[in-house]
Image (cartoon, rainbow, N blue to C red; front, side, top):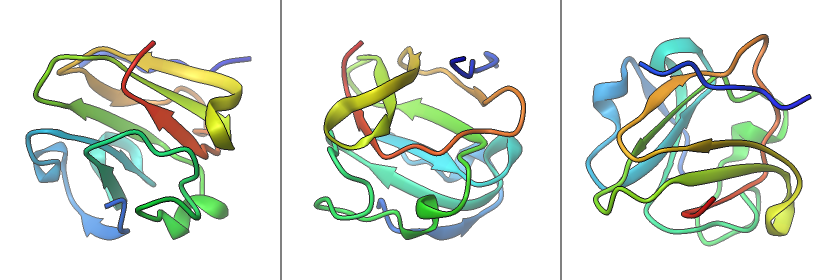
Length: 114
């Protein structure tokens, strides 16, 4: 079952709020409401663990919140497997942010399209 986001680089870094996601980025956190460790990207990434930017904590930690703070307004889709495969867990519209329902999910890739 796909997780949903409730409305409301990728180098891991401590973060305390959605405000830490700079304009132009797609950000994910290990905690609810933009808290915990953060990873961020400006472009698509086919493999969060070995791509152009890595998100090392995503290997063993579920993503709990996300924010599409991109400049173009394009949506972002996130997937459970590399190369945009596996389950598409969400399509997050530009400017939207929120928590993944339940306990979050393991993610491995994303792209700026739905």
